[in-house]
Amino acid sequence: MTVSVRSYIIAPMNNQQNKLVLFQSKQIRRIWHSEEWFYSVVDIIEALTDSPTPRQYWGKVKQREFIDLQLSPIWVQLKVESADGKKYTTDCVNTKNAFRLIQSIPSKKAEPFKIWLAEVGKERLDEIENPELAQERMKELYEQKGYPKDWIDKRLRGIAIRQNLTDEWKERGLTHEQDYAILTAEISKATFGMTPSEYRKYKNIPYKTKANLRDNMTDLELIFMMLGEKVTTEISHQEKPKVMIEHKKVAKRGGSVAGNARKQTEKELGRSVISTLNLLGEGAKKKLKNSLSPE
Image 1: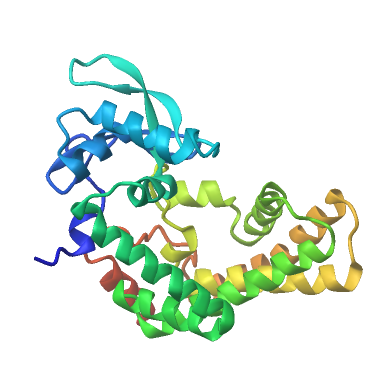
Image 2: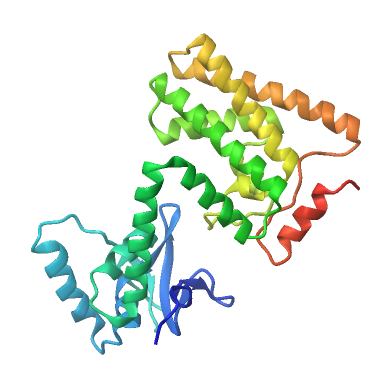
């Protein structure tokens, strides 16, 4: 019988969202660490293999796949709550390494994952050969999530503008994600009066989630974000800042252009452009469609 990969996806339980997730009918313990979820390895092993001794099974996999081959460990040891209510140190993996772990397990239950991972890998290679495919697949993904076409067009344009901006920063010698985060915060603060982290709180986007802030923006919010980043790119290209303090000034200036345009727009419309709308719950995309229609 063919088993859909979707039925295996790790999904939150409503009653113990911070501690347990479901993997098929099995409970997988998890813990928030280093800005992402980590999952108990022995729980994943038990769910995939139905082994009565998942710790011993994991010990053999660990020895065969990593220690004997002298590969770097994909797991970290974290204290996770057990059935007795106490916390014990156990091997845990993040989502990326959970997939790596699944690839190491010879189990029929793991086969749908392995096939899916092979398909994703092929798609990625195809996208490297033809970058337009990546944009088309991204468009299809947003359509499947229920986003309106007009919104998708702006979102994809925003992604391209963002890529141009990070390329410009790289050209000026900035290569660390932390630098990008600092400069993005400058642009956002000047554009909306909030840093991205403050904006997420304003939109009530849960802290312990990978939800993208921009995927929760309205049309107008995306437009002003694009404007701030595009102007920043143009100023940087023209003035060629060399040190971080200069980059921050450029980012603030670019964001200020968008911020002033936002304020003028709000004056003309008689309402705020900055929205509390997020698109996480049921019916959220319908709310977005309604927000695109004139009031």
